[in-house]
Image (cartoon, rainbow, N blue to C red; front, top):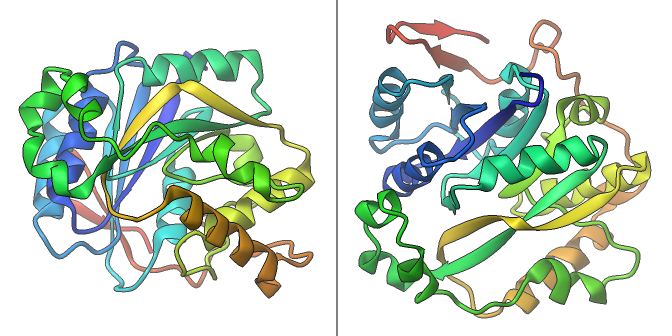
Length: 281
């Protein structure tokens, strides 16, 4: 089916949260998707768990590991896009637990407008509440338990971005885009290392490219373990950084999203179904 989705799931040193995220993906009502786990050099048991996961589940899945140390989030997301086989990309992080209709709703929206960039809704679970939430709760879809531990019902996409002039903000924790449009912009700028900067840069280039931004209320993910004092303050600080950063001024990018033409790649190892690692770069 041409409307299948590739889930690009980046992770670093959070095996327990990753397991919750993957469990929620296995609960999807629509199974027309693949999972690509991109491990940014985790030092916990993420690698062993991920290899075991992709070997056990009966659906398309791949695990890649970046062997170079460092903050490689933009590289990891670009790598996922390069090896995704499906028409649409949905980026999520390793601490995002999605509802069972997540994939189905994304597919329906892409069918309506394949040129849009979709920003799903995030509900923020308090970090101090994680000890009260178990993997069994996720397996059994006990969303009422998660709802008891939310910071608030504020939607930062609507309640804070309106204060920024002519602003187009995306974040890769719950974002959907057609692969052709992601490739057209050559993906994330891998020079960005700070938190938030890579998303702000991509959002600005998407806006310049004319892609409409659509906020979705039916593609919901629980952001597990959020720890901050104010959603409003954090979002506005990120917005200010976007406009102050010199890289925001008329940049075009950056790198070529083609595994055969990039010479400055990190070392990437792909683990196939037989556990035989293959060095890609």
